[in-house]
Length: 279
Ligand SMILES: [Zn+2]
Ligand SMILES: [Zn+2]
Image (cartoon, rainbow, N blue to C red; front, side, top):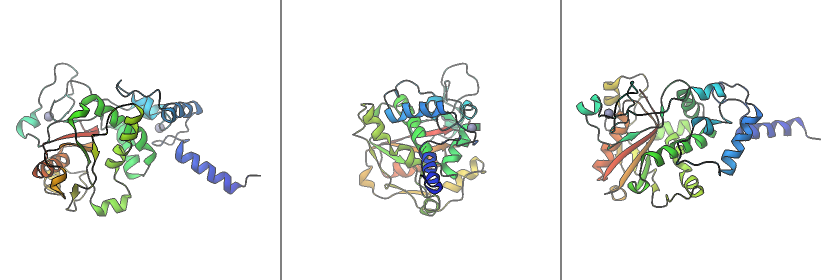
């Protein structure tokens, strides 16, 4: 006889591994979705990140069909520098006004999706509701974007944007790090040589406490984040090519400040990859 207590524990464990409800809207997920999840993630054979991964494939088992529909992929034409997607789907890629008037410290920035609607809700679930099960599919989405946008031989070190120690303690995790934590394992499974790339969570530190950027305009964001980052050990990044990783690119103020600190530490260049890009 299985006691109610044991049954409750089993249910909680199943919930942790395979959510029975959509992580965003709490709608019940159908069994079929969970089977797809098992096939795609526990076997791994059907996953080929060289093909553009559909958000739907990755999120099956985590989100309901309605919440998956709101994902908008970043598509050309974009700004080749900051990666912003232009509203019109016509024409060629071209440098945006913002990059012309205030050039960024980083070389390029790219993101797989637009920071809007359900995708915003998904990222908030991870960040503010601690649904860290999402780091698995979201990490794959980010890895797939990396493989699509970069030559893997053009990066030496991956640096997740750090949190201030006070915020890290409160949240319990750094979402930027969680998004790249499994990359080596994913790459190995896919026979992609990532062994020359190192993930470094120490070299860049958030030395100054800053209020959340949410709700601030572009100018205030820039002032708020100014000189918030520093490099702890210059020797580890000197002449290295850095890929800075974060969850969201809003105005680029944070990425720019990080790049500034890394370049001061003599990094060769800094590129930026985020999950989502504000329009
Ligand atoms: Zn949903
Ligand atoms: Zn631009």
